[in-house]
Image 1 (cartoon, rainbow, N blue to C red):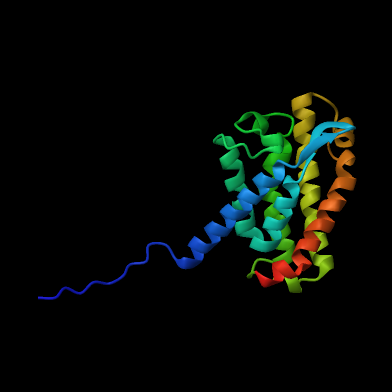
Image 2: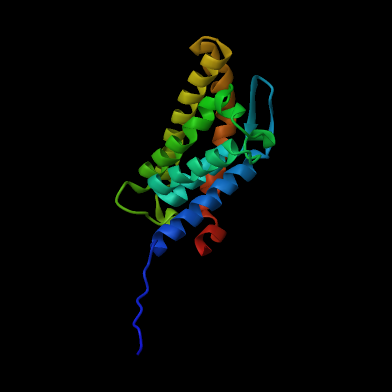
Length: 193
């Protein structure tokens, strides 16, 4: 007597692939956090974490880009040294950089929404550069807004002082990160992947 068996798919291939890509961009964001140096006019260090946020939104879209950065925050909270300068744990998530960190998933989702909309993913290589830059600028506004508020609350300073020290001081660095992200998207290596 032969028994017939059917294959049961518990999780779809699309979900598995998206989770894998989200984990990859979470790891990339964590690796970028190691490129960190002091900002001469701010206690908040300059790092490349935001470049990871930009790329997650551009390549993964609004849903999985945001999920990717949630994975990143969860890994850091669990003790993986993935925050600026290799820090980890709950401290950075409640300290003077907390506003930035909590803004990252929102920013990645917003970037993905501006670049792709909500009805599917476009090939980032064919998305207009103006749309890429607009998405990253919108994400930067979210990061600066929440970063400023978080800094003001934790450091007990006014919003103007907090904005000057925790956002305005980073504008030149963000411009370089936006240019780098556009360069990555437009590179032949990204197109071949």
